[in-house]
Amino acid sequence: MPESSDTQTHHDQHGRYPEATTVEDFQRNLAAVQARIDTACRRSNRDPAAVRLLPVSKTKPEASLRLAYAAGCRVLGENKVQEAFRKWEAMQDLDDLHWSVIGHLQTNKAKLVARFASEFQALDSLRLAEALDRRLQIEGRSLDVFVQVNTSGEPSKYGLAPEDVPAFVQALPAFTALRVRGLMTLALFSSEAERVRQCFVLLRTLRDQLRQSAPANIGLDELSMGMSGDFEIAIEEGATVVRVGQAIFGARPMPDSHYWPGEPSTVVSQP
Ligand SMILES: *Cc1c(COP(=O)(O)O)cnc(C)c1O
Image (cartoon, rainbow, N blue to C red):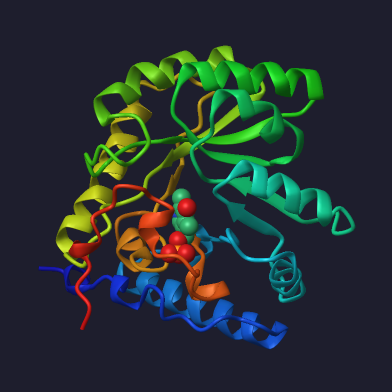
């Protein structure tokens, strides 16, 4: 057995990360997360440069985002488009700050994403692809997108069922303003590391299969998977983007069930 199979989740730390309130806090937290990334890469013989850290600022106030920017963050992830749009509008003075929308999007809000986001990680329907493409054409913009896949099989999670992804990807070249980069998933939210790992393995396997048949202009290099509680496991299974909020910004005031409704809270063992 490779030693990486012993890697545990950190889901028991959810809600325990202290709030970052100074630039130094952010610098320290970013360095600590990067050190965890480096260690996971070493363990799995990967180059740390092949893993992008996406700091996730959802629910945090503008002042925190500005501190993160001062500490060096140039892309921030947000899961609700209206909140992201508000923050983008308020922070126009930081013109090299880019926005990644990582949460489910209703088709009628595609217009907002098309205006300001540089990346969208939760593409999960052709209707949405069509709406985004149409609005992007109007704006004269393009958008990096990830196809969200439901790898845990939980009905509460968004994303396409794995078996629906191949046909979906075949249809994407029609939307010329969308630059398809890869796949994204949220793993099972569990302290059972092996079950979490299986979600990441599924995403990587799917990506590898798709690469054999994908249309030429569809990029499938990226795997966005892993968050504060499980990103080391995701890296061991091939993540190229990890989306990390609490370990950088501090705990969110609400339990995770607030952001992913229907999530059973009992799967997380509290010591
Ligand atoms: C909030 C969020 C994350 C980050 O979760 P943390 O526990 O704060 O690291 C990652 N991905 C998505 C889709 C999210 O909504």
